[in-house]
Amino acid sequence: MTETKTPSLADLRGEIDRIDGAMHALLMQRGQIIEKLIEVKKTAETGSAFRPAREVEVVRRLVENHKGLLPVELVVQIWRQIISTFTYVQSPHSVHVVMGPEQENARELARFHFGFGVPLVKHSSPASVIAAIARDRGDLGLIGLGPAREAWWDKLGLPDQPIAMATAPAIARAASPRPPQALVIGHPSIDTAGLDTRVVAVTLTGHPPVHVDAVLASADEGGHHHVLAWGPREASDDEIARDVASGLPVEAARTVGYTAKPIAA
Image: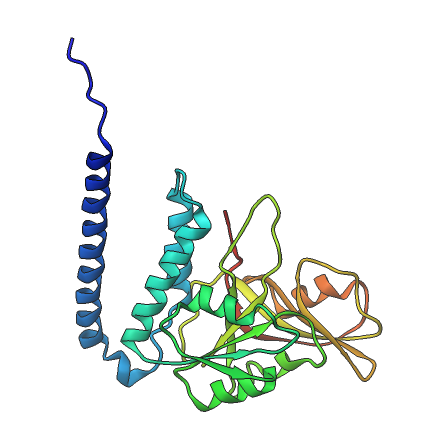
């Protein structure tokens, strides 16, 4: 009976070096395909290369297939760096981010979602980010969610204004899910087909409703309660509004974009 030889430390390091080399070669091969993609799509002439539904599809497949010691969050972060960098290579753009005392983790979240190769532009308010995206159809915006001083989302989805198209982070722990921390916005020319969740701006009469999972952000202005809500894409604006109203009268409800629910890890 042949005795199995235990690999030496040098053998294992050599195997790691071989894997690293193969990974690098595949990344370079991916870059070559992107170069061909640019020629075929002429992306630089037609606007943003950002495809939120495609990104969700890639990340979801990674999470579903992952196993082993490597934390799945790290795998997602690596692929988000790859995806975002190659998106930027196809069509250079900036990400406009609200940064300030109330958004302490905004830069970290932006880097996790969009990578380190994409320029970040600092803004002091959501209104400033929305105005910047309206001016440049190729750029993207990242705005923090939760309680707000004003209903900045009421501007989304209007003529010549940005729309919602993703939330960040893209992954959530199934055992202790947290609501998304930020909303990604972009020009309405960006394809949102394939995203399974409708984002709706809702205006209610009266005091704020009880906390529900369908509420992404909220603000009180002049006796009205404004809510940014989400629900299944197949649901109507009114159905999603009634879900968050908790019996309060609904004054208005309007779709302001689409996204995908965070992927449960």
